[in-house]
Length: 323
Ligand code: TRP
Image (cartoon, rainbow, N blue to C red; front, top):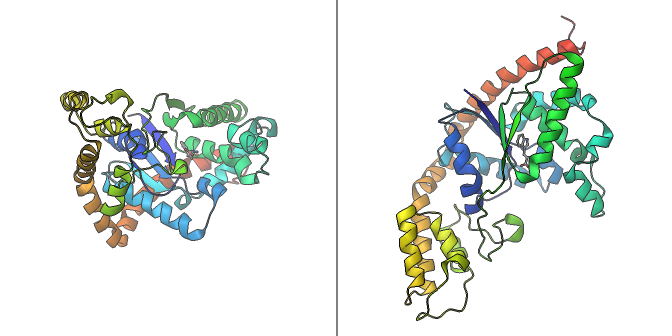
């Protein structure tokens, strides 16, 4: 079975954009592949805000995944820092890439060109990511377009290391989601935390309603037909529908008589209903941290077994281990 591995930085509240573009798909992989999935809380140190946020975001991400159906027995799911061997591997791999190559990484270059003085952590970021991937013999790594270059760096590092020390690392294939259906936020731009235009799945009902009611619409009156292709409400609503339901919604937009306020209320109810079982599960989970920890331990142990094997191979070829 193919091993699919990916990491997600903990970044705050889960919104519809993350859910439909990333999480839903990841969780479905557990039924078809050997899924390795982790919360990249070492990477998120490069944008550290506070220890509280660091912890909360990590825990929230874990609770979100479990609530939405990720199963600690079907997959290997862990918190990156629980398996610290990746940092050791990062050091070993750092000798198989040049400063020159690293300074070409967009994540680093962009910061420099915007006048920032990037940290060493940001510079090393791609090596830590390579370690994440190579430690676990990943076959396929699904990532967003912005991570494409990091995957190329990973492959370069693996090839360089292998050519010097033997066939230690599997060369991973990227699976770049080119057209991750862009999910619009309430203002019509791509839904993203940094644009403050998100609809957060597990917000209180009141806040959720406020976000949905704030979705932009044009000035078409009740008695006019509405253009579904230009409507943000229509695109978000459609995420929840099957093909025949989508047709009906289209027709409703095209037929005069539709009131934006009403359709937004309807959408709010639909979102609430769709996520209500998950919301319940998430609340229960957060009341039972011992259970969460016991599930996380399973992931940590499975990941640990795999990485320790790889590390002992690497230590051997590098003349680090003496036995
Ligand atoms: N850098 C990735 C991101 O920000 C997260 C990540 C860390 C990752 N390690 C990884 C993704 C390994 C894939 C594989 O999205």
